[in-house]
Length: 66
Image (cartoon, rainbow, N blue to C red; front, side):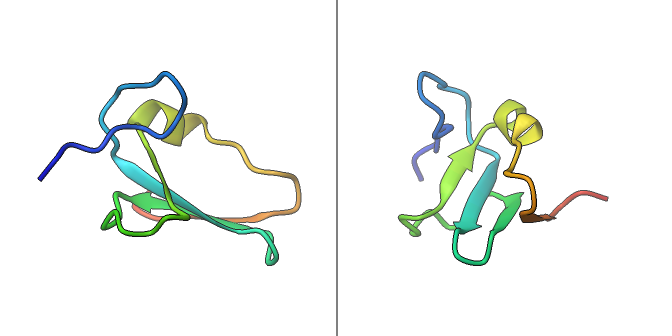
């Protein structure tokens, strides 16, 4: 399997998390690296996953945090 890299422009770090959005529902989910077949998902490296911010008023689900 090919290594997946972060979706952020100019970042070549390995992806470790997947971000998905529901714009209409104002919800975002950030969790472990997904299967990779969703064109609406964004893979992020550890640094960008940690620094990810969301619009005020959005519900954010963070999976894998204990």
